[in-house]
Picture (cartoon, one colour):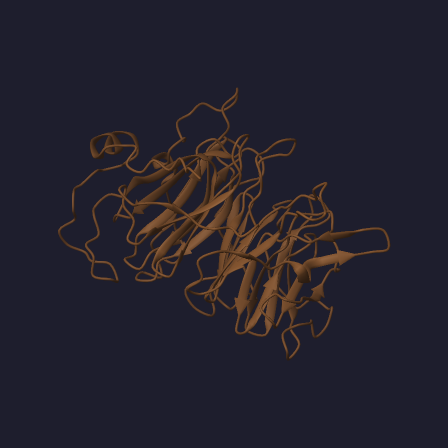
Amino acid sequence: MQHHITPGVLAAAAACALLLAGCGGDSGGQLDGGGAQIPDVSRIDLLASDARGMESVVLKDGAAFVSLSNSATQGTAVIKAALPLSSASNWTPVALGGCALGPVGDFIVRAPKLRMAGDTLWLIQPWTEGPDPAVQEHSACTMAAQAASFAPRDAGLRACNEYFCSTLDMSDIKLSGTRLYSNAGAGLNLFGSSDGGATWRVLRGQFDAMMCTHTSFQVVGERVLVGGECPLDFAFLEAYQLSADGLSLASQDKLALTVPALQNRNIQFIEQVGGAQRVFVGVEGGLLRSEDGGKSFKFVIHHPVEGGRIYPYVKSILALKGRPDTLVVSGFDKKNAKPYLAVSRDGGTSWQELSSMLPGYSQPPGGDTKAAIPTSLAEDAQGRVLITLNEREDGQGRLLQLTLGRR
């Protein structure tokens, strides 16, 4: 099976001209937490490209794994290359074990997400019921530590009523201690598993599909934070006490939270970052931060719903391991139909926007051109920041390396 990965699409000089802000120019001074020299100016390098969209990049067993969406002519795929990455890296396909989604056909483009939960790599995706019951798509698959291929892991997500059965799909999965949590079924749903996802218990919502978007969630100690938009245009951020086994709520009563007015700003993610007390919540038009374990939040990025210069959906966050107060966020500026990228060097108090460095930023909005959108962030062992970005929203995937400078 041929994969149209084209590493080294841009030569070094072209990359400097098209993608980089300040090519070269070492600082000659300050070092990061891993002992590497920090350059004066941030830059972005192109590592690989594909005609299909790139949904996520994760690191496992000394390799980088990238998931590719389907297209009109090709199914989904996962590819990998040994670390450290470069524009000359050799990308090879990963066996999907029956977990691939076919070409677009009569359906929209679908993109599998990759998530690490402990040593296990999860592939989660929006599956579709097919006409042949013997050959069905899967909503969740896993690759165990040192494994070479994926295997279906969605039997425990099969929900049946008196008329039909359906497999619930999720948009996120996280490990807390020995327990897995997922938002399978969307809406208000939050599930827990103590057996690696073989079976699931409902903490919140129902064991069935719901009409609203998937809930974002994060376990913080003995509490769980959940957020979303259900019903439509009514954003919420709530906290609940977990039971002793962590697989149910101790009470359906919400715990006290101090949160600024969200209006209709749907929650994009909830992540515990850089220590037990720091929690970030990405929202439409901003970013919330908590310094007390998710009990109170304040905006650290805040753009008005109407009338502002930009309106970014802050969809991903990454705290650098060697510099935990250095944070990178990415997303999509809805107002201007452009990709969004920003960095903070003080734990999230102040932010520098780097959006103009991204491929697709300068393309004119409207017409037949779809906006460029970053889809994921990751960091390798050497502190290199990796970004997946689709230059046409759901196609023309780019794998980028961000080198952060002092400015």
